[in-house]
Image (cartoon, rainbow, N blue to C red):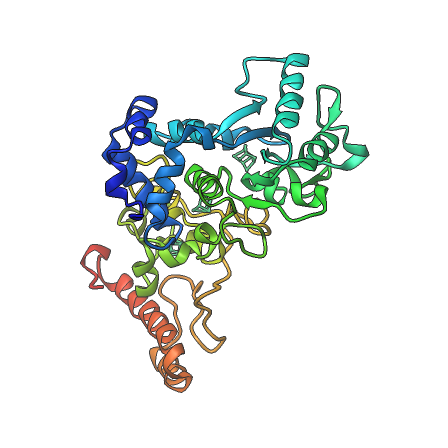
Length: 387
Ligand code: FSX
Ligand code: SF4
Ligand code: F3S
């Protein structure tokens, strides 16, 4: 039998029907599936399998979506995707059988619909959890239909095929868990006492959620996860590794304050507290709202606050300097947070750099640039400074 290719799918009735269902052309749909396969780092041929699975309406998994302590930003970002494809695809790819804020039903009717969907799709539905779960005083700080969030989560998780914690609140506690954490806000995994898939971010990128669900839909299993339950395709790299301002970091060109010339020229935001060097997320690669590469925090001129990362987002002061996880200069090197114009002498840096060998050589180059550039900044208008 001929293998299914993305080209042969163009003529399939299911794919043709996508035009009617989603209001996008077959070509755009197939391109979208190919891009999604590439984002997840899947081998050749996966794009056709994805397109065939997504186009088949019979494959839609039932999804029960719970809301606890949060701002509903996760659902909002999903539904406010600027480009119509993403929002439509999400609602087309899944059968959303319970979602408190989108449901037309209310009260007993809504709860009855949830239990009916759970019974009908026992062992097969996906449980998506948005928001942290308050655990103090037996969970009385969040109740839905007379049930605490703790009880509702445990009831819904019992027969779920997989549990996906969407957003930082459900993934690790997020904003509601920040000290002094008066309600004992906890993650879905901590309350259930078992690992769950986590898609952190406040809000997370809807594309990462969709890709995870599509992977499950197509291959019947979840994508590869890291030790925190995060899909590796989305959280395997630091923001800093893919940031478009990284060449400025390496060359020692930093914005010193909001609105200064460096900031206006799009220089690195490290000194304004950017947490990209200690935050794992693919924001610079895929952006938000499908409107181009600048649509992510650093692209818009604001430092990354580390919203995906426990212990960084909502915990470290916004303007505190990030730990450099991938480029950490030894103590003998000039300090990267040196006040403008006061770096260590180039001779001292060069001596340490020469001793440090090939790998550390890259770090030496960065620090040398730091010192040189700071000198340039003092003597020359910034727009004339050579890179
Ligand atoms: Fe809000 Fe979601 Fe932040 Fe939390 O996103 S955007 S507070 S991660 O649970 O609704
Ligand atoms: Fe980009 Fe921030 Fe890293 Fe600078 S510190 S390169 S702005 S991620
Ligand atoms: Fe959050 Fe930083 Fe991305 S603030 S959205 S992880 S760039």
